Length: 377
Image 1 (spheres, rainbow, N blue to C red):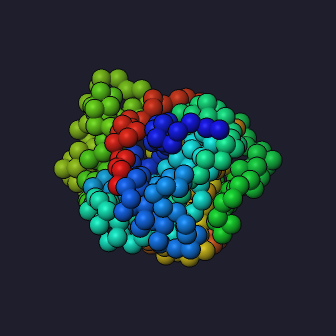
Image 2: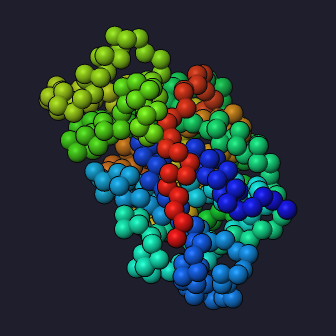
């Protein structure tokens, strides 16, 4: 029949926090509605929740974004934060389902109403779901936990092994219960991959040349694994570059510092870095893009997009594949429009990444404690 909700939620959070997020900033937060006033607010929000009160067996969870953890340097970061929350929400619901707790969408009270029952002022509520104890277990909890831990952003070189059309069809075609409007495209011909690599070489240095964006990115770089573990977010140099000698570590620590990077912009150094990224891109067997019909999607659209991406990424992991987002080309509006025109990509692209079989593994990225962003209201 499944375990009690409080225990199931703790276990699910431990799995869900392995989800990827931009710069590993982990902007998600979860509120469990336990008090009478909070549950009545949820029950009164719409007809689908009618009849719920403090005595019912349903459990209510609110997905929120923690503003103090959000990236803000670029306008596109708002959408990225919602996508990151969608990635987390999908895995949280899946982990609860694996313990016998089934999610049902429910209308959400307004932010003001939730604040009246204790929602922190820095939390932006995004979704409400109610969970009932169904006893149905669609997958193994241990299997899901193992899969989630195996998933990682892999920035290393990929194997020459081709990704077959059958595998790509499986990745794109089995979006169980997912948002049907998401368009998935795989660039796999030699010409497409060569053109995309040239695009990255030409424009991939934009983040290094953008003062505010690079300063924010650099604030998430930790120089050692112990520093990364202590912070609970961001990434160590080894997460970005793989194993480094002490000399290589010192060099990157100096060169990547915002004042030094600002001085190096005049020398064309960002183009050197984009060329190095392009070389790795060129040797990747597949580039995957995802897009929504509207370039200016709503918060709800972006959360749904994150859920589709989560399903795709976990499925890819299960097939032995890894991903490396090339976010710079979709984070800047002019670059995204050029990219879409170059490759005839519809709507608004929200994700583009390298896809392939890894040749190396990276250490796990740091994470905040699983219950650090959980509140009872």
